Length: 129
Image (cartoon, one colour):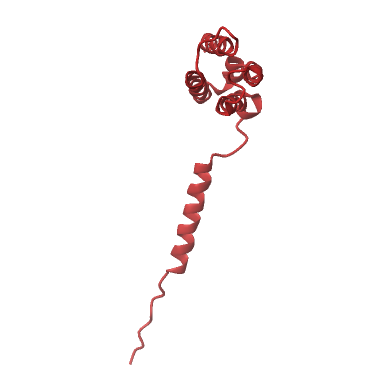
């Protein structure tokens, strides 16, 4: 992964300079590749995501994009860089938050139990004559 990161950063930084030939949509696709690769790294090797993807290098790229005459108005590119930094930063790697899927499932189970309690039928006792 470090070699992929280095190559992607090299291409993106070159695009920010005057000699770069990538258009904004092409650079966006390049950043999306980086984002997907970082997500896969986080999924399969969460302990090495910060070392492999170096959040400070993506922050520097965002600064370069902001200063670039060609990409300064491309906010989509800036946001993808922000997502990358957030994804690979050490705080995000620790996973302090619960996934929303588990909370949703728990809420659905609680709702089902509450409805079950409301609809419980009480057996009627027949009066003997």
